[in-house]
Image (cartoon, rainbow, N blue to C red; front, side, top):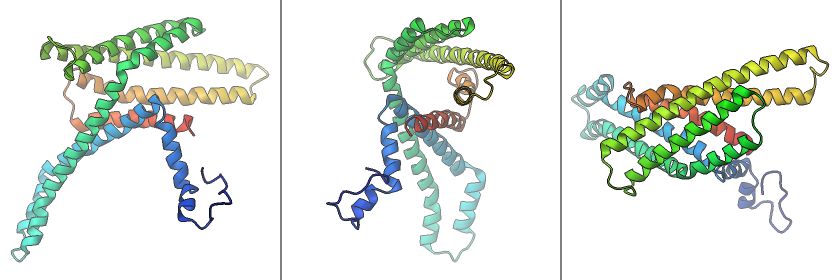
Length: 287
């Protein structure tokens, strides 16, 4: 029942619960329930929340350890000899509270990440489904067809390597050293980076084909066809959404792969941007 559903005659309209269950708040809760009822919705939500918490945690830690913040606390605690012991204790405990909040946010973000990795244990089933769809309904363009199969292969390799590391980290896989598993995890990151590079190529090819199609439509008689415009708008929306996700993940791969050192907040910020794009899409398809 939502705000658009009439209240049954047997329930008093003045009931507080009836008002709550037919309010816009109920619509939002029902919408989130639809999002979290799908695997992609759960993953996108946890991606956005988990990396967002990582960003918050890192930002709070940086604030707590910054010289400027410590100087402010020092001035508040010792700048006035007449300050009460309670005031000094409260200012002195602020840094500890920030540290506790940062630790809690990091722990909760880690739970989100762990849950997402667990969900990817059966990610190969989605790859299988994608391979089946590509085989029976391949892209008409030859370049996109090659890219589709190559991306499916790279994603399958990434999932095998990552799942292998995850199962080892949980004690399922035995007899492998930590150094070996770290190498496999980094190999998974580089495979994922190759997937992103292929996706950039795919997006470029899609944009090229879109420009060719648009030029042909402008020469034809159906340039104002509403169905054509709606389809092109949908293609544009999907294109920009994929681009945002790819751009957000791309620089992070070099840090995850050990090629460069990135601050922790950058992982949170980049992942949060990718998660936001996926979360907005999940909200759209379940509206």
